Amino acid sequence: MTVPSESGGSPPARPHWLQVVAVGRDPRKTAIRILVLVIFCFVFFRYVVLPAQVDGISMAPTYKNHAINLINQLAYVSHGPRRGDVVAVRAWAGKHVMLMKRIIGLPGETVSFNHGRVFINGTLLDEPYEKWPCDWTLPPIRLGLREYFIVGDNRTMRWQDHYFGKVDRSRIVGKMLL
Amino acid sequence: MRIVLRLIVVAALAALGIWLWTIFFPSPEHIIRKQLTKLAQDVSFSQDENNLIKMAEAQNVATFFSSNVVVNISIPGHEQATLTGRDQIQVAAMASRQEATALDVKFPDVIITVAPDKNSATADVTLNATVSGDRDAVIQELNITFQNTGGQWLISKLETVQGVTRPNF
Image (tube, rainbow over the protein chains, first blue to last red):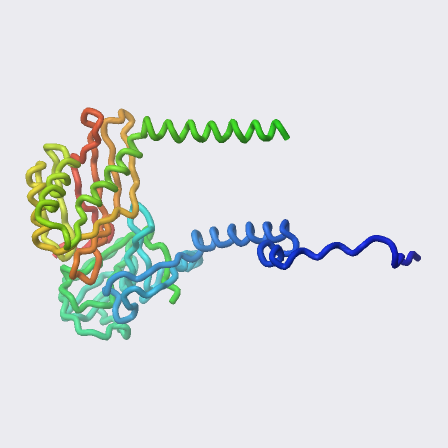
């Protein structure tokens, strides 16, 4: 058994408080932590969750203009998009600007509007999120095997002024988290 | 240590050389991207522009297009329009400045494909336009064809693409 001698070696000098604040007690460990954090954030905000800002009133009153939201890109890994989901739809060229719409029609279904009411395969669709009056009347449209019907919640404007319609599954980036 | 330093210097010089090469001999893709950025700037206008500047910028917009250009635009909420030739582009650019008080145009996403012969290229572009007074921005996908005419990349065809297919009623 050995006993450390009291006289042998001086204790290591404590780093200056400014250094502790700036780079931590062990700069190498701090650098590794920062690197891990940067890689995690890069992967997380690129492949898992995309931050987004709502621009426009087409999803009002559910989503207000300029609201911040998150898109869950892994929402449809285990299952396909479901009716009622609010999704982000990308353009062909990239994902910097996307459409934010609600899915009302699923692949293979027939969607129609009659005096503002939505009918799926001839059956009235219950839409509790629809708060404002709508008078759209549009003939039935049949969806393909990979097509979804998307539309905004704000249908107070003329249908000619609204972005809506069929979209291919590959265009749906993910589901809104909030 | 000296070898590492030399390697760093060589790598830095190589990077500088590549950067200078792209400045003096830009790739077609680089030129087209720059063209699109300039086009977006020239199409945009603010409400405090005087008539002389508006006229000059409208004329400038036409220079991005070839003389036999065909433009087909169909945007929800706006009239469908077909324009042919530079003159019609110029008239449309001037008309937009008279009808709206301000317009902000951006191309946030651009994918460029250059043909193997390097004489033509297509650009898939997302248009993000904000018209003063409108609460919703115009988001529209565009397909633009460029032709290399005498070293200049000019737009020979521009058409809207329906990413979300609206029913034809």
